[in-house]
Image (cartoon, rainbow, N blue to C red; front, side, top):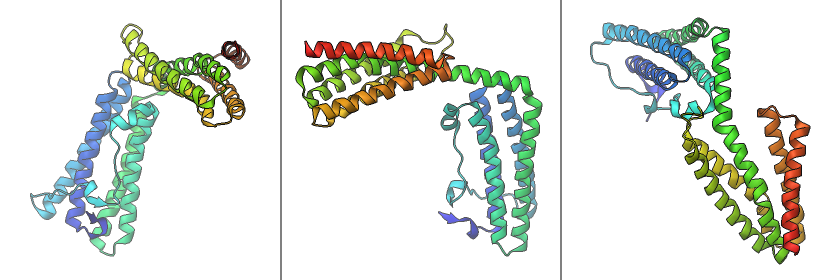
Amino acid sequence: MRSFSDLTEREVLALAISNEEEDGRIYADFAEGLQENYPDTARVFLDMAEEESEHRRMLIDTFVEKFGEHIPLVRRHDIRGYIQRRPLWQVRPLGIDAVRRQAVQMEEEAGRFYQQAASRTSDAGIRKLLGDLAQAEVEHVRSAGKITEKRLPGDVRAHENDSANRRLILQIIQPGLVGLMDGSVSTLAPVFAAAFATHNSWNAFLVGLAASLGAGISMGFAEALADDGKLSGRGTPYLRGLVCGLMTIAGGIGHTLPYIIPNFWTATIIACIVVVIELLTIAWVQWRYMDTSPVSAAAKVMLGGGLVLATGILIGNA
């Protein structure tokens, strides 16, 4: 792996061509991946890919004129400390705004890198070339802004943002909340029944662990198999199943872990505190994403959780 400062002017120009080719393909991938759910943003990325293609052609013309027909293969991952690009599959789960920010960040990072590289070289030709590339990246950012304004006027962008928020709630928040509620509430009875029946922390921990893992697996499969998302519009059944299953396990494990502590009463007091935190978290999620009154959400969750907890304790002391 080579340092950027060791590249010749010819290699720097070849690297710039490689960068434009790769960035153009990334924008095209973004467009392809977003076409179904966000067609207007997809058109933005198609326009940006065309911009990159035009810049690549200009760089190739300059290279051929100065160095000849053969362009050496110099790629960014061959250069030590060079900027890297995240593919769509890493950025898309973060939301549509994250994808848009990634596009702007790509251009800004390239511009800063070229500016820093230009300031470190004493060769006038290389300095000019790097400065021109930095300016080109600044123009890319401006072009991206203009294209976005053209393709995504306020009402269109608001519609896509609403769609993204709805998708987040249906595919992540809702199944996660269902899992968290099931894991936090349904496992209270077996954990505390075992705890008070045996007064043995380790036995309570084993019961809680088994109940949490079993409920997580069950809820995950139920969420994934009960609704394929085609009619309901929720989509991504396996993602929903994974989220639901993991959150179910998390909800049950929270008040199970304190029973690792050998002292029964210390473990039980900590477990009860964890239960309160879990129930308040559920109420907060309902208030934040489900438009539920905070007082109403807290009251319902606390009532349900309290009843299940009391049931477990009563059965354990029977």
